[in-house]
Length: 445
Image (tube, rainbow, N blue to C red; front, side):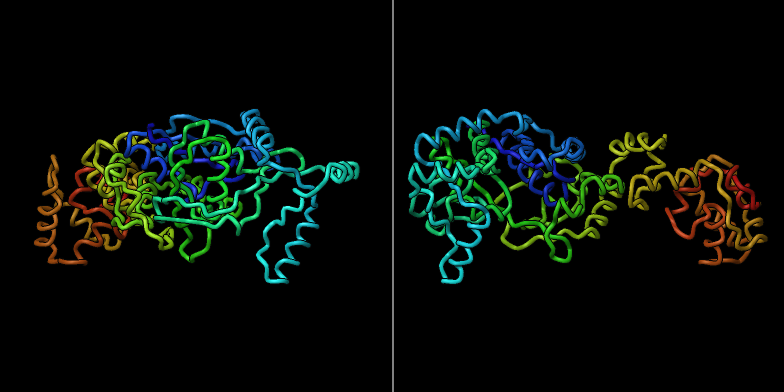
């Protein structure tokens, strides 16, 4: 069977970098093995699910380049979940419970006070038909629990190694609410079975759910997938990430002008033994990917590290890749322009500033009017090359006796209006003689 994984976000908020890391790792795992990546929208929570958040999920994943092979919405698959529930009822594995939330909380507190694990006592299994009828006559509607079988459940976790859990420490999980709607667990397992999911790669917060879920797979006669539980990403301060809090959302990072491959390069390596560095393409990340490299240490997402990677990615970006990106921001820059400015970019949009300096009118900053006018008289004739700056400044040095900062700083200010920037040997030919001469005269050009 072909490797098939899934990323299953709920459209209840914007995706954050922690969500993106799991989506990326699933995608890389599948692509490394020639498998399939399924996008499953977990939208069974009708009150909190929103269409704009669902559209944003598509936009965010597309921006990262994580193209899916199949896309399904759980809200359109309710017949599958009802059929599975009926099968479990018929087999005696799904049973009705009539306790209210307050009654369950009271039981839990009593157990804790006695030093007993707060595991559901299965009192509902002892109810007679008359007692059930009496509860329903009161207006109570049952929630439905899956009856776990005693024993130890074992699985080989691709991230954590051999795992086992004693089911006696677990309450029978509620699969269906009193209003008849399923909780997350049943639809997720039914979909994994129906879609042929072979590997479930998710956060370690699901480890304790795995034993019960394995039994539900088995009760439905479905193949149990392999599991991999990865340590969850935190922010730089060690705090957990949350869609509800808007933690480092992909939308914000995209709007801030960050490169998707900078984010991919960071998220693919956080928590692994691989060195973090810019990767130009997803293909490069696929080649290097190995889920066995991820450790149990808590990975921290530092925006400063992303900023650094973003700048490095631009500094190393070839012109062939940069050209369409320049056109997207309205620039018709050639290779000489890109070579001149890329080392000074932290965002692609920063190229606009240097395009303005090279090709558009700039008001010069004149630090020493007499000196720069003398320098303008020594400007050589065109054509200009990268040697022009060296030859011209040597002539200015000989003519004025200036050197070092006293020579170069006034010329940079007059030509660019900036204290710092790309090497002037590369900028000067782009500015051209006419603009350079006018700026040295103190004129906007």
